[in-house]
Image (tube, rainbow, N blue to C red; front, side, top):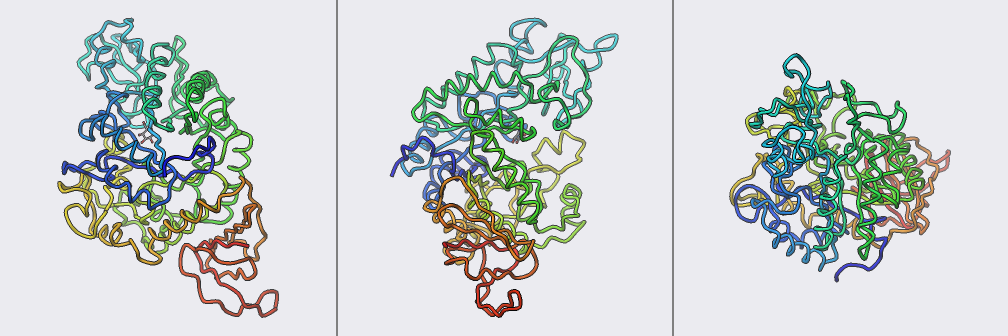
Length: 560
Ligand code: NOJ
């Protein structure tokens, strides 16, 4: 089969995110690996996806699930070798699946050779200048240089003595202390990342997902300015924040674009950037990364008005960007959508997670139905659909991870305020039974709950209306249904129902409400996210009408 030659393959692709350590373990060490991915190519192929995006598989001590990188141009020995990577890549390409790798340019890990060298070097040395080292405040430099916060720790500064440094300086990290931030004002850093991108692009990697793309450039002019909280970037003059979304960052991506365009087909990239829509346009422009994640649906409730608002905004933004829209309900940082939608919207999700689900009941079945309906809706939209592993199984968040097994620095490093993201990173269940439900022979690095058995690939395969079969069929149909990147909204008789069509007569109707909805006369049903009720007699404007019935929390696709 092989890869298509279409240079625009990425514009409306389906991209499946693999969190490698939790996908499939081939050697029984409890950790997923690259050979594990290769062993599941038939499965990936059965999903009818266009590409996989692999979260970091680089050498790492896993202070932040691999987003703490020791070496950008190698594979973690726990996950395999570069040869395993090449084998995986070529086998995925053979079945027509492209590969994105994750680039983490804002910070390395504290075990990166450069950071070790920096710690061992003098203040003011070239080695220290690759990171952000500064003298502290206070009579003896005992206070951090500024009040900058970190995502995973109270302060963005750690004293170098934590890693054996002897010069009484502090270094900056916007995430965990094990993730020191690079100094992107140093040309050596810029050149090293160009080398990394080239390294993977030369091996045949098709695309890159860029981690915290908006954080690389900081205002490092002396004296450093204070900023005690994360900014609401929407309320600031664009580009003038000390830590995020500075105008200078775009020079970096313009240079990357020149590199991407040297390949045939040009390499593609997608930015993870938490910035307002008008700023996102810069990251997503064809002169820069080409695409950016639209994260707005992650925040939206299962509600027609909220979805429509986000969709309209996303489509207009993509036009301005000169890019295509991106849609996602989930990723490795988010609560599983089935769980999110199964909770009342008034529930404080962090408190709920911390309580192990005790503060409010979860409607498990309704959550899965809503998640499937939402998935089929986003698959029908113009643009790219991103799917996170396990979403196709309708997995719920795992809540009962014992405290001593929690891995996420978001919890461990941040006063245990938020139990964090491990609940969506539990290794996938492949089989109903067996050690770790077929994940591997040596257990799983995060504990899997008993209910995984009935959510396993084995349990759902071939079962009509299982989440997996609904996904498979939807994605197979989508391949042939994808049309020009346009959408037309159709008026519905119920404000809780959204109906749109694509230029080729592909209609999508989602019922977000609690009542059944009659969709008679739209066209031939080709798929639905759950069983449709029997055709019946409905009163439409006082007239008895025979037609089809869309139950609550269901999406139907039709051909007009
Ligand atoms: C965003 C990644 O998605 C997340 O998992 C990670 O913790 C931070 N960036 C830091 O790299």
